Amino acid sequence: MLKEFRTFVMRGNVLDLAVAVIIGGAFGKIITSFVKDIIMPPVGLLLGNVDFNSLYLNLSPTLYPTFDDAQAAGAPTINYGAFISTVIDFLIVAALIFLIVRAAQRLESLRAKEAPAPTTRECPHCLSTIPLKATKCAYCTSQV
Image 1 (cartoon, rainbow, N blue to C red):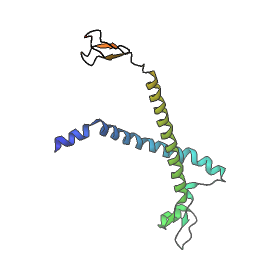
Image 2 (cartoon, rainbow, N blue to C red):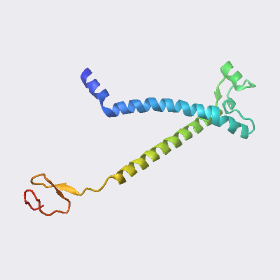
Image 3 (tube, rainbow, N blue to C red):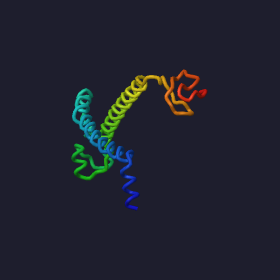
Image 4 (cartoon, helix red, strand yellow):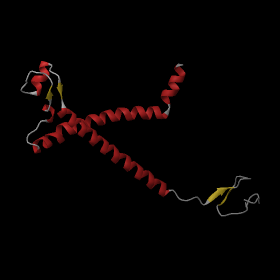
């Protein structure tokens, strides 16, 4: 069983997936910081000095002056400002992934175009290399 597990883990696609998950997690942290620290402050400024992380809906009967006070008191809240930040975070990640996949597809199509068309083929009888347009093998004289 241990040998089977080792074989499973050492397959290329499992290792590729593990690397992708680790890099994706690190990439996600970078994007989250980008949204929280660079994108949202100017957006909040444009909307009249709004701090998105302080936007919430208080579900308790007690009124709290700030979001931090409500959280410290353990009041139930709907944090729609944090949700808006998370949606923007997701949209940026999705857009960047789209651009990366699109660039990879373009690169792959360029590689496919660069491959020259074959000019030779193998004779099915003697397996010698013959010109693509040949109708008779020069080595074994078989009709191809």
